[in-house]
Length: 87
Image (cartoon, rainbow, N blue to C red; front, side):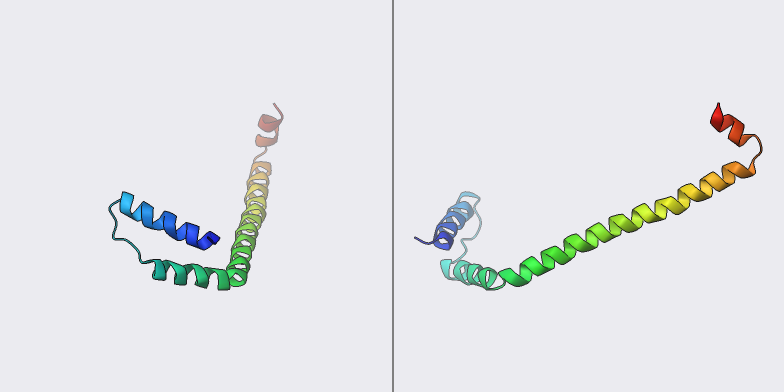
């Protein structure tokens, strides 16, 4: 048995266990084949998603620098604040 045939057998048993309408083995074979054929595209999309997530976290970090800088500038405009910060 090939790997996807084992998967299909598990899927059919899982559907039966949960009372779901059984999925035909032909449908599952076609879905598996489509996933196998699309693996390269799926990997590229996954990498792009991870890159976008990393970029958004980097932007959040950069933006926080501006907020912290503004807060520091505001605290320096108050003559008593540097003394309070020091203490």
